[in-house]
Image (cartoon, rainbow, N blue to C red; front, side):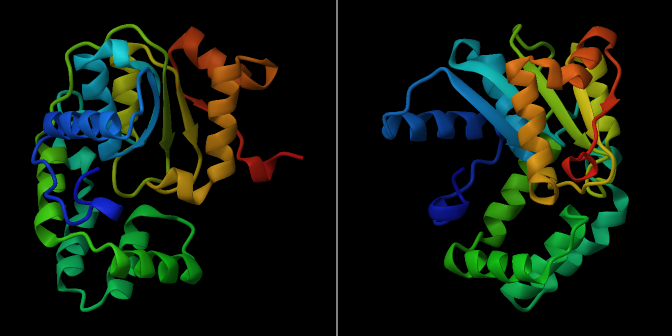
Length: 235
């Protein structure tokens, strides 16, 4: 999205709705047509929800990972109070390495020095400005979420060990929209970072609908969260 990665010099939109418009323009500019299949984490999940609500013909299916909606969950669950001090400390960090190490303490339950070094190198190459970071935080905090989402396949993945966003936010979306929810027992907020194989397998099973996806299908039938085993727990 604008303000991040190779587009870090661009100004981040100040609302989720504007982020949708920006992404649609960017994809059209690259000649990438719809319908799209989206796997979206956190703020990206809010963008995916808004996109599906406004332009349902452009979205085929969505996987939402550790996301939230302001109309369904209070602010203290969407950004857990234990992280407020860390966000202030982030602003005071003197180096890219310091900032990325602090980010990992908030988003990951699998601390890794090599990952921190890699992320710090990415930050130095594509720095996200303070202004863009604040605009993204404000956009996420202000986002209320759609009252309804057109019928389409949606899978919720959430981390019980998420110290940034309460897993109750995903449970609230599952209860409100009837979407299947599968919960990881101990990963952090950045679930694809902490257990990428688990995420890939849950998505594969959901899309394929084969016998390996029994846990997800039970969630669809009952509307209740289901804990699927980690890949490392399976023989």
